[in-house]
Image (tube, rainbow, N blue to C red; front, side, top):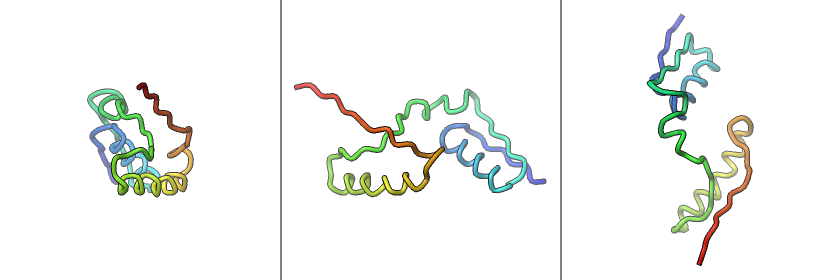
Length: 87
């Protein structure tokens, strides 16, 4: 049996380990110095928004919604986005 060690349990490392296990990649071990998703991943809010400064960024964000919706649960769940502003 193939043994695979994935170092780093952030968003990318956890995803790699998960998909390797799903694909029957062998015995997959996910290791991290801290908690799962406890580093930079824990600071990301994971939002998909359309408020950007360039038309290209707005188009990319708008077009990406379809991609994320195709992923469906457990990978994507649309809950909305709210900006608060003062003048």
